[in-house]
Length: 93
Image 1 (spheres, helix red, strand yellow):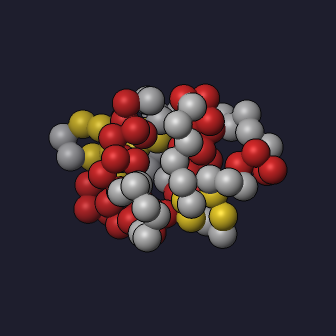
Image 2 (spheres, helix red, strand yellow; image 1 turned 45 degrees about the horizontal axis):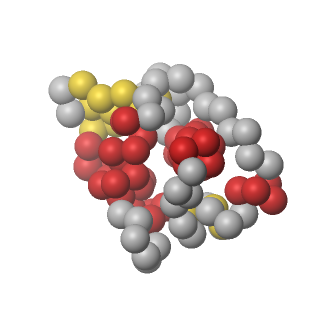
Image 3 (tube, one colour; image 1 turned 45 degrees about the vertical axis):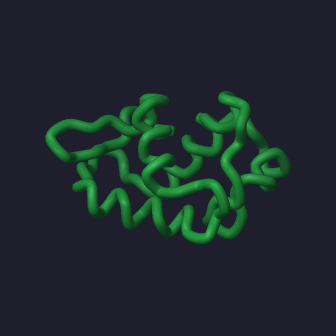
């Protein structure tokens, strides 16, 4: 549930890709909510390799940001849930 408008999101997301990961938690959550809403269908379960592929597409080439860290942030912030190697959106962002 992003509370950042397009102008505030622009330093972190451009053309469907991350350009940086915000340091501030509220901005990080907003960016990750946006990423989840754009990439993971509600109610659908994803295997870890598929999640990794989706997140690589967002992160590839971004200095200091990798898909594993983004996956961890998504889980830690309860944006994605995980069980038995399956991932899904914890809520509709």
